[in-house]
Image (tube, rainbow over the protein chains, first blue to last red):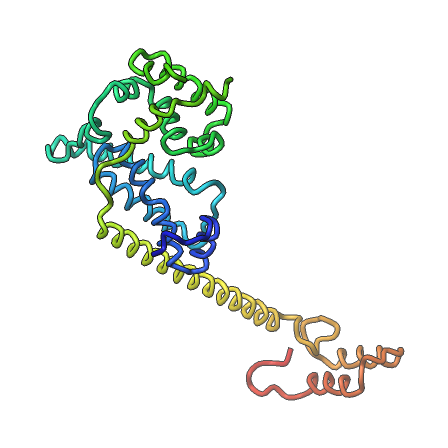
Length: 180
Length: 130
């Protein structure tokens, strides 16, 4: 299987540019789970997340040949997934008026049983929630966050700092910080 | 200290990661469809790129040929029109002969004869020699 391809993303992209289609498979298998998880986070719906996954990799495929990666692959993919998800949700919102079956699953269903932490996260601003998840769920560095969100690194730092401070101050999340 | 404050406790990290993990997986047929479409798109774009590249090459070559052709048929580009008056006359042969007499060894007698012949030879019906 192509998942164990030892080449870096950059090397795979060079190979795809040369016409090696198998390298695209390796790139896909390396990033598809993360893209799907991210899409799921934005859409809260399995089928929508799959649609976003498809559209994201169709977009990536259209970049070849001649694709040049100037940042990390995930930093490149993040805005693609986010914008594709937003577009899909807008489209669905228009359809919902006509098709009740198109109503997305609830956010609780998307992330598991509702609990205090979910309520705390839901209470954060979109920017703060986004940066927390990027840093601690996706494992992005501050540089990668700045690139993905197209913001200065100083802004990323202060946004993350404020998001964590807000978490610490929330009584529902305090139990997590008690032993830190 | 600031670094510590910008970290999260492990149980919170674990809960966050768990929250971000969907319960369902990607069906194999979705994988196949995505990869099949991607392969087709990449192959199509490669073909298009090769076609465009060769078309641009051919168009450039055609342009060069056209320019060279036009240039060689331009009035005054006749190699026998030595004095550039737009016609080949015996004056052109005299001009060459004078240059040769003045010591220009690049001009041969054969070349002077050739110009003189072009100046006096009869039109073959396709228009006057210019």
